[in-house]
Image 1: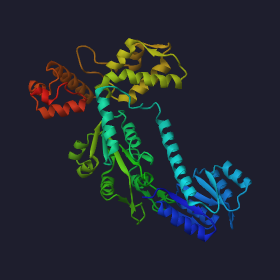
Image 2 (image 1 turned 90 degrees about the vertical axis):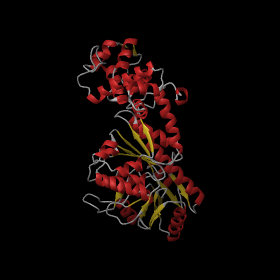
Image 3 (image 1 turned 30 degrees about the vertical axis):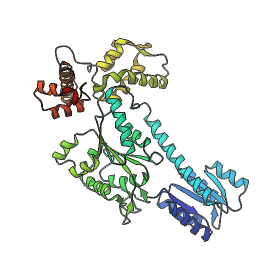
Image 4 (image 1 turned 45 degrees about the vertical axis):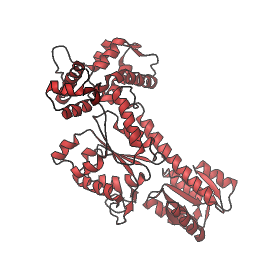
Length: 460
């Protein structure tokens, strides 16, 4: 799988041939151009990860070409090279954003080091940009509850493996954070992490977004474009909301996962891919399979390493930690230093069901920081902020605006917590007392983030 796509611009045929062979042996895909005009044509037709420009060319100036592509808004990393380098040319190129300036004759080792470091830097900056966008939106994987400790252990084990990971959980539970954690702790951490939201891309464009397209493949395809699979070369591809992928695309994704190769839209070249896939959904995929909305064979292919994220209401002991974390972010962003929760205010948050999970908690905290007039956030402030969505009132479980599924799950959780407590945490005894199959109780407790205090050996 290519380490990167490189464009080499030089008027010496021997240099082009040498660099093409040397870089190809190192795993790069290389295009060459013998003049500025040819280079501009290639830049207009496809995208590159990095380019090497000679300074002096028969039909123009490499530094001037760099100026033009920068003026057009391109952020393509460019390394300049010259056999007659001058300080003036080096200064001009640096001011235009050239990554480095190499003198001829080129040292292959030095060139490979520059390319490797440049691609790492570009990918690190892209990752940092994505993380900055995420800052404060869903928080980190914060929590000391049993459910979160187990989740972190599962992430650590999954990171060491190479198999596909399937992350399930309600909206706002932090599925993308799990994907980032797996990538960051894996052997692919130095490679790219690409993300694709399958529900956000129009059905007519999803194949192009995933596999790329050739110039002229469809109306508006003016240049070749690499898709997410190619861009994730040597790294990880996070397919978010994969449960909303159209059935036609599910078949194509299944083939790629089986064959580890793709074809761009409008192309005939088979391209090998070396990508680890982490998929995620908040849908009940098993139900979707039964209803014919999701391919069972694709589910089997994705569900090699399943990870289930607990809802926030299943780890209420983590709410104070998360609330204080979001409070620090929100007070800094809104210039409200010194704000704090009273015990009553924090208690009101802990009692709330959070159907939107961690993301909803973050939004509520920011709303409180903006709307609370004083520096203390008390029970009344939280109650006003939540409106009609407070914790269940005495005498009933129904709350206006809360879906039946959430209410039923809360009721089940309360019943199972009390039953486990009554039976001293013994799962087998609890199953007998409730008239349930033990396997069914285990599955239900796992889904709700519950666990008995005693193992099988203690129950015999």
